[in-house]
Length: 151
Image (tube, rainbow, N blue to C red; front, side, top):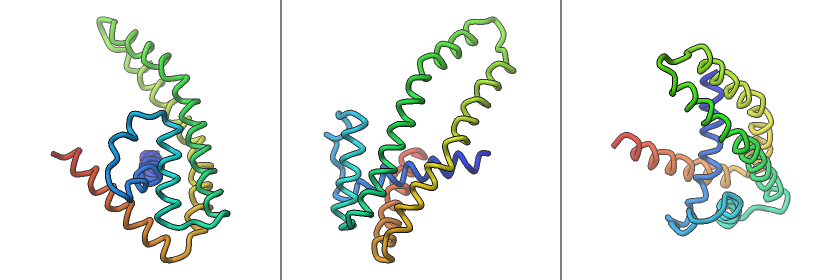
């Protein structure tokens, strides 16, 4: 179960992170999630010189991830209220908290096959040179962000 969450996190980090091909554009972080996602798609498209079918595959990943984000975001406030409710009690209801975590994990597990499949269609459509460029950029991005978290 943890492996699947890790895989989804890595895929999403790669999709978002590879957009950092042309350097850090801090202004992008002041935009909506849709604008950020489109910026990432544009950067990947520019760097990899995607064909129209490849671009359509990448846009499908972007659109699906954004739709999932909206779905999870709509549940976010209720989840926070539930957690605050649990924390307002003199003793923590561990079983209730554990159940909430199981529900969230189940949502991720339900959605992960489709995200992985869409990402695989995009990735598999890349030629060897494009895959190498994508991999290198993803590795560079993940390494950069790993160092941030450990410092």
